[in-house]
Image (cartoon, rainbow, N blue to C red; front, side, top):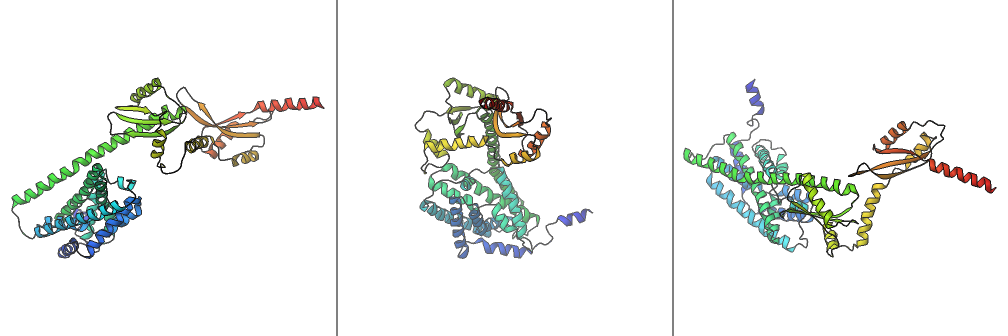
Length: 448
């Protein structure tokens, strides 16, 4: 039974001849002629995709890039102690890096679009998850390379273990003088290269690829120690960055909770918000549509931050400043359009109006058919203060009915809840309208 299980999961099933695998990798290691031109074109395509924020274009560049082969070749060489192949792979990887530097730098220098887009920014903050993607993606890649039937995993590996985008991002950052982005992108590129190599090394050792020459045990131990040290060097910063990302997400969740409960739910419309994480203490800049806070109110808001476990943070409320308009427009990305303060005010008022608008007007027609005992039905949303600290929107239905009719309001409310997908519904009998109609009838009869 044990042998059957081991045979079922064995990588030796369907394995290609070792010599053919080695020859295949060696033939793709060099960047000469066609490979060099394909690499240059892939760099341009990746740079354009990052520049115009097109995910599809970036994926296309990753699919056609031959950058993975010298990385696999380097660790194949280390696995079988082929130091000539190791030297050649390292040389070609260096050539690929220099070519990418020249092509990407020229492109970004000539491009009129200098702003960093989300596709580009995504390659500047690597963490432990990028390590896992590179390692397991590399495993899939080397397993596929060592099979008789290669199948279709290689394109997926090229996309998952993205090598080209972080390299182009690094040269973009260098051309813009942004060293924070540069080091983040280079670190991501290094992670992908190194852990593809590690997975290649492990699989080839598992498959017992024969070394070209026998090395003494001391040298073999030095190689293993060197690999272990490099793994630690590469992986420790990724844990730190992952923890920082986790803490930042928790901080943002607590901040959103604070803003929703203490400001938005109390009727204060925020038209501008920006958080500066790089300052100590952190600074939250807010601006409101029509509310002006005095010093006492601002101080009270800052004191409330501790109740939400938001430490080392200060709220700055921007009001009555000449630069506020420009900052708001810059934040929402329309600083180059001819928007005025009036347009901004109309936009925010429209947003508030939509909160109170009931779009399902067809429901009134259905009420008239299903519940004919209800007349003069009108509907709308109304803000109700549930307590001193918060409020909620309730859909109110005003109606008239004959006092002799016993109306099943519970049934109607359940039906309305199902139709409107909300539990916040109230039926209100409108007696005042009936009284005014009775008075009008009396006045009309006296006039006659």
